Image (cartoon, rainbow, N blue to C red; front, side):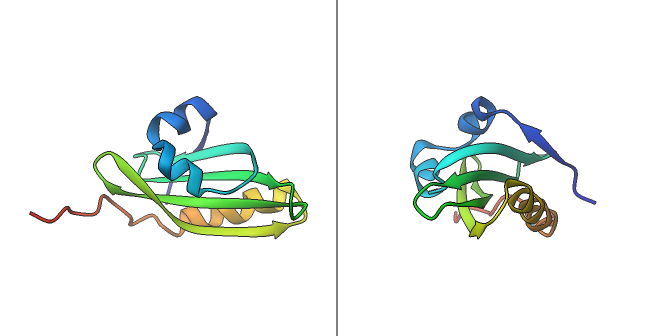
Length: 102
């Protein structure tokens, strides 16, 4: 079982580079999550352009980096987006660091 916890925005920003954060495209971010080992991160936000909630999942792809590996939008409520995000994150429990080429 994957242990996923809510984290604050500052902790999320410390883990994710500015370039990766700009790829989230969630609009106004509202919630942030991480698994226990910080290999998988997630964020929920409100997309003002489409007037709906969205989420993004990030996986660690290098010792100090993450990449956006999933993004879904057009949820009617924040609660629905959060539940779908947590389900998606739980499905990535075997994700670990991607080995770098030698």
